[in-house]
Amino acid sequence: MRDVYSPIPELNLLKEFSDRIGRVWYSAGFELCEYGVDAGLDTWSEDPEFLAPFIPFAKATRSGSHYALWRCDDRADLATLPVVFVGDDGDLDIVARNLLELFQLLTIDDETLNPDFVEQHTEGHEEYLTWLDETFGLWPPEDLDALRAGLKEHDERFKTWATRFVELD
Image (tube, rainbow, N blue to C red; front, side, top):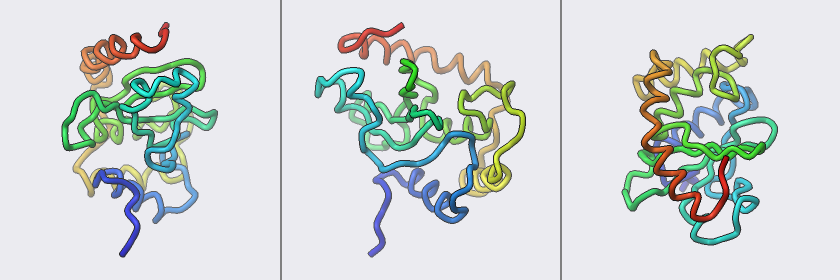
């Protein structure tokens, strides 16, 4: 029996894609890491109530930031949980409403998810775009401003919860 990367089918498909293309960047700074293993969140707080709802799954930048799912409720489909950016410079923000939305944002091919900063796409970028379309029927987001505006409610809820444990900017 083959080892499964995670209990999330969407992440398992991304892991298969990542393993297939090898040590090639397909989105700047993004790299799957061991599922559910610490992402530096304990530097924010060691309170188990703070740490328990996070499910780390990827590096977000080459400098040490990570992505984690935030278990904001008891839903069964973990792929629908909000995605948190755990920054190495003190950022703790919701960046996507769910995993598939993060996959779309990764098409920007910039660690900060800002298309204005892209000078050259990574080596595996085109292959990632093809995989995303063939696997999920998704393309790069057409309206980043609308997407980011849609995060506001999730981010406010997250920040209200997180400030019970940590001080945020």
